[in-house]
Image (cartoon, rainbow, N blue to C red):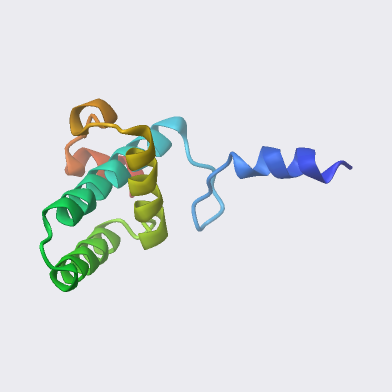
Length: 109
């Protein structure tokens, strides 16, 4: 079997810890949640005058996100910020945020 074909097929799937494949709606909802927290972190970075203060607030924000959504990772949030910066996306262009309660109902069945 050609390993590159298998690898590319598997890399497109996201799995829950219990091994269930996420639905398209769940993936979209999770992306919106990650976008919401990534923009909050990005705003902290832009507003922060001192790096130590920014770091402390960013760490708290990531911990808050992980408490509500255990599937969120710090690396995932910062990767999303890097993508937003590369694409030059504005807040209005990049996200269409759902109400967090609706998102949590979809993602935390």
